[in-house]
Length: 136
Image (cartoon, rainbow, N blue to C red; front, side, top):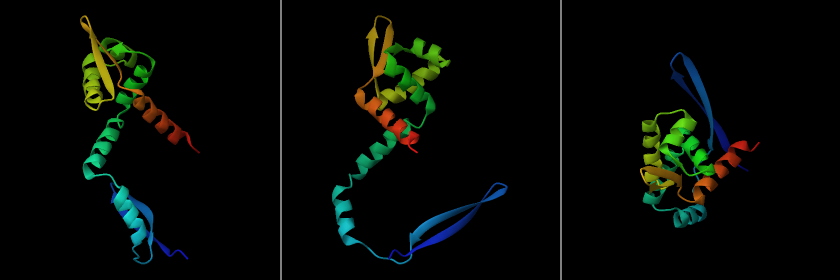
């Protein structure tokens, strides 16, 4: 028998009151066998931090739009700015973040710098995210 209780919390946000209901255990019972498995498999804190930082990069719709363009072709900043209707400066800023996080790479050809996806993992991450949000 699972003893669960519902805790209702109310918080005033501006001119209205929000209510949140959470399920919590009715008692306090530690499941040592589960904790042992978790402790053996949980990544190091630095890895968890790096993973969280990576996912923050995907939290900006402009960067996602850039990645979708790069799914189709290797392009320069001028092309990205035109297709996304943004300034070259704004695009360059976002590309710098994507490059620092190893999601895009660049190559120079004459006076132009062309950007492309760093590897197929980027496409996989985006496609997995799309699959997730499209689930019923």
